[in-house]
Length: 454
Image (cartoon, rainbow, N blue to C red):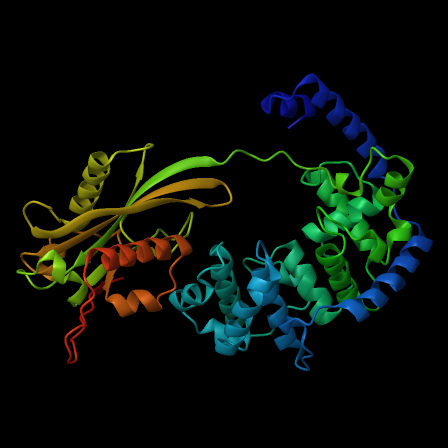
């Protein structure tokens, strides 16, 4: 998209137009400015020395004699760290490696096991790509690819991840560019161009390639990322602690002009407005006792229906409670009408004819934020008894496209559900606790039934 179209699309005013066009002209100059040989040599020495003294002790950095195991650990950690904070990743990484210590162990896992381990990290496509990539490598001989070129052929491994694995595990002299590296280089060179522009991104890779140390490429790349994560931070950089501050043009500019700040770089991108979606979620609980009253629900051996999402798109292949997308804000009557239609079309469940409604209550609503979607979720609990039995009713429908299963309370607790699904279930449990008196469950071993269709 050319500059004028971009400005028109986002409704920029005259002052903004002037600033952006001015920055664009400057960027044509500063992006052509490469590091000098002296700068490169000095920054390599300074950064490697600083990293050696200040590197964080992280589990994926532990010494590993088996180079392929090291590559696998780097791969898992780098994928987990995308869009996720380091402190959050540590526990997930440790549990993952304990369960699947090698590439071959992971290749034997199921997507359900992987999603269960990943639950809470978000961006579940990353987990699926890890599993698919592991299976692909094992199927093609089990030898871990050692170069960026060969790594890029593995499903789910992009330019950044390939560079990280190749340089850290196999010492290939290649750069890595993530958000931290972009910020460091943008400030070193005072680059005012939009960091998300494709030409600008390409230039950042070229500048990073200039800097990477030919003898310790892995440590250098980790040092550059570590610098951005801990010192050259987005809003509060510690320039006095920076090992390469003598070469930082943004810092130099800020000292000579009080109107300029190190944090002016990189240029802040214009955020795309989130889409607002609305969803009605039905926690469908099925009880076996026809004479059960709503006050006895918390004592029952009930089962919950879960539906598997399509294999492509948002939250692909994950399990959730039955739900429908709404056209916008909707009242209770409209939401129930939509849910009833969904249950009738997909399960052959007629709320008035094929089952007895034991309890139906709205339990709450909340907003769940995805990177590009603001989803408002209305949650309800629907407890029913099937007059003809679960199998008889559900077999009436040809549901080739719909994958579902029923699970008991323990099954739900142990499943790897997304945070929004887990929140809905927690709301239901809280609602039950408030509504019903807490009586101890009858003693004796209960027989659990599980019906599943894959």
